[in-house]
Image (cartoon, rainbow over all chains, first blue to last red):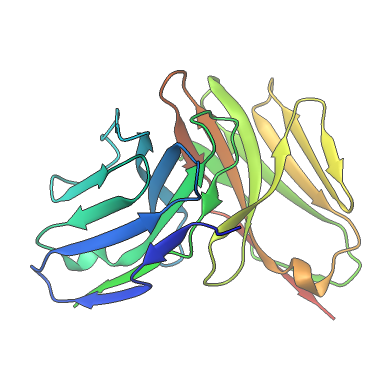
Length: 115
Length: 111
């Protein structure tokens, strides 16, 4: 079946612009996660959704970052007034249920470059 | 100190070698443990979950020592296709949990 998809695959933007990243989880998966991976670094946990609810937003790097999920499916991560340090690969993952023991399936990521 | 720490690597080994990856975690409330594999410029994929009783999947063996807060992954008879970055992953929390990834250890298997 279809896996997690993300769009765009690559995004180049100018400093100060807003960007929106999209994630389509695996159908039926109730939990959705956003991570960021900078060059040569490990994954940084940003936010998770249980259904449409994001109970803990403390992982978001700053108030320029926001995320939403509608219909228990698609999620968007929005970065306002992008900065060069926002350049990274943004990965989305989903799992069947919201349990720490569940396997997370990752999408291919969006490579964001802020000039 | 990072909450999940792995060998910095990289590991360079010949085909057929046995490779051991080590991982330690600092939060004793950690509950679930995994090894993920990430190929270059690709997304991470689950390799195996790690249980206290230890688990084996073909050439791969994972062990968890809760007392020492230590996780290991052993790859026997390594193949060229095993070349990748191996990520140690820990989740903790009840109700709302957090997933913490180690920085990963890069493995190069050479002919």
